[in-house]
Length: 341
Image 1: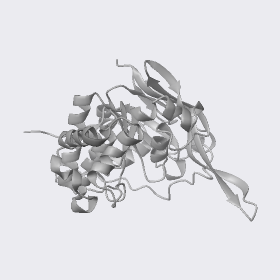
Image 2: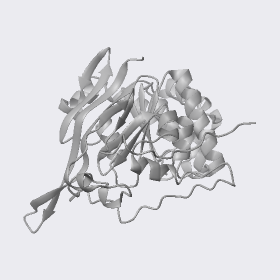
Image 3: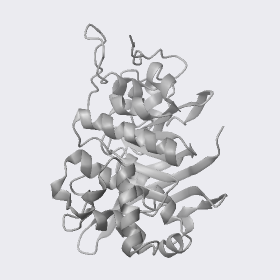
């Protein structure tokens, strides 16, 4: 088993809810509420769930775009696990830790400055960190463009001259500029056409192998997640409800919420008779989650215990963690493997 690159220990992010002229705090939105997991070096670890479940917030916490409200964010740097939660922005920069973590954003149209040429966009991290300038900078940007499948002479063009897929390649080149060990990819293909999605996903996998990258892949598209992931964590209202390797999670889910998400995955067999599970009600309010299991108001398998007692994330099988009171009783349905040939 490979060594751990990132480990979250009981990480929380609570945003205050204020009211009145004096902005009195009357509550908190628990965007991330006690999340723990580890990402191994060289793997693709995916976070999935409905909008508002907290998966993007976790990505921002790991790269310290947001400070956590509690818990530890351990990152392996120079052989040691460093707690990022206890470091200031200045310490993160001076110790060079920020270079080792980069992000790819969801929208390739708004994540690039329209007034900056490709040379400036991709080269900015190199300039800020005083790594290259002048001719050396141009050579390095040309090299990066080639590595993501773009022609070197594009470096003098502006973002408006490129398609969505090309812009996302520019964003990927920018992320690679500082030779990071971890890349947080936040919905990196959701804004692209399906045919372009496949190209970007294949490129991500090729770059991962070439540069020994580790990915935290954030998505709501389970078809994409199945294709690219080594392990998957399913989130609901700020908590992880299931975590496992991709194959067993997709074939034999153990949490009702995971089963419902998988029922929406398009089938390769047009004659498949499996019906989609339509959940009743709305996603729970993270500012006022229900008692017991947060999913129980929408769960078709709920019992009285679910409304009164919060389940704990436990390892039910080797490497398979589930937060459900009825794990041993339920036989849930997953996605059939794709038949090739």
